Image (cartoon, rainbow, N blue to C red):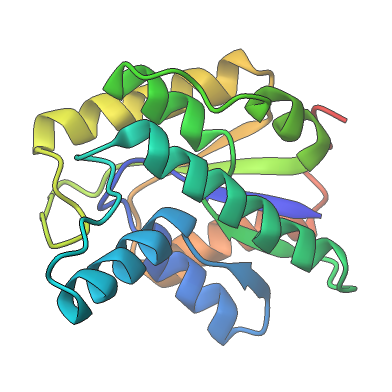
Length: 189
């Protein structure tokens, strides 16, 4: 089963994913951050290289994200873990396309339908926002992204569970309790 951990930036997604991994669960890291990190390394090694970023060419960036996300998700499907936690999903690309006013990646909705996400755990904002080398959206844009993500997941009919802003151990227990009690349901088969 694939459980998505999502929400705007600075909601604790990566912290939660890392804690789930520490507890022995199979995880998939955030594709967008992996690509941004990789592009920044290429730029540092070759100053003439112009990286592909969401703030320079969102559509080209989303193409890379979708390709990597599909590859990472396909990889976990081929393993035999019962519970797989994803830091974001293919669905997030729709929200970002709407925010950045670019066209959706062709075939994305079809790929989402095939992805078979079990439950979406939507992390509520923690009350602070920090920009960094990978996170360059303003706090206002981040709030818009956060709201748009919830809207898109709900619009597409996913089972969305709001996760309140608790300390990390309590947040992880909140999620695991719902997974262990079978309060998830498969959506978008």
